[in-house]
Length: 340
Ligand SMILES: Nc1ncnc2c1ncn2[C@@H]1O[C@H](CO)[C@@H](O)[C@H]1OP(=O)(O)O
Ligand SMILES: [Mg+2]
Image 1 (cartoon, rainbow, N blue to C red):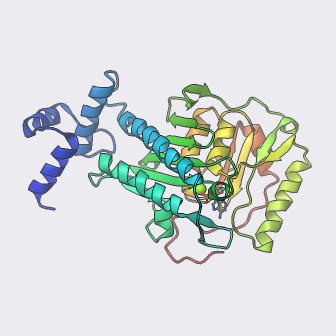
Image 2 (image 1 turned 120 degrees about the vertical axis):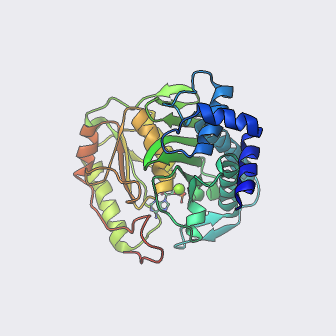
Image 3 (image 1 turned 180 degrees about the horizontal axis):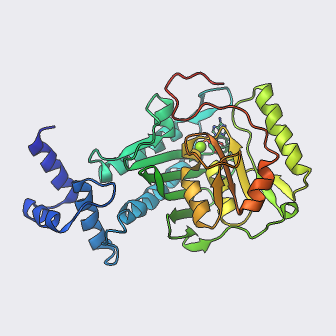
């Protein structure tokens, strides 16, 4: 794009005159991980929204507020679509469902985010875009990670847990997560270092340390090969026999993580999950005082498709002892990598 066009576009986005833009550029140094135009945009937005927020230490508040609005709007579209006839298609297997609503809502979310933050410096990873062949690589750039309809099977069946999940990472670190459980109308959100909230009430993980007094969540995924199903059920059997108070599963990973964050259950783990299912939930669990690990107890890797979230280390490590591992292809594996 020619330089003059770029400038025009930027000014339009910022709604600033050239003179105003120059004045702002003088006052703004670069926010971490941001380009100049992005810094100016944030500076202006932050000044107009929150007089305390225009410090260098707080660059992402506008993006966070916007993500909450977008998630709420997307949830309203899903609720409305649920009242109409739902046409189902399949993706990787006969039980891996997708609907026009998944695709439509992802377009709405990414479209709105690009309108607001689309100066070319931001990346977008969305479940439906990736399933159509777009890259799923996490770089240091500001990156939005989106699951438009988490719990598509629930949505199709009218099982009442469906979530919109929007996360934002910079320098590969998750900055905030928003999970809107749209049929329950519950808005979960968290920003790194600022606590986790459900409908503006702060939430906290449970303080249970005794595994015998815990409820644990896992899901079964969409791979029905006998080897994987056997391992999953063998793990569940061992956990049930510890014994724990119960096993549960809402059918949406994002909501499951919010249940850990709000103290309704002690842990949720899964192998086979994708980055868009868990990115937002990971921030929410951590900000609610919980922890995120790999299913072997090592450090969490967003792209590994393996995740253990728990209220504390004692519960996490007790469950990890029982997990039978099986291989999965990473989210960031080259396109066309065959399933294990
Ligand atoms: N292959 C897979 N293995 C495990 N979980 C998966 C999966 N594919 C999707 N999920 C997610 O796991 C939860 C239910 O098992 C949902 O959050 C679902 O997301 P989805 O509804 O967005 O597809
Ligand atoms: Mg999902």
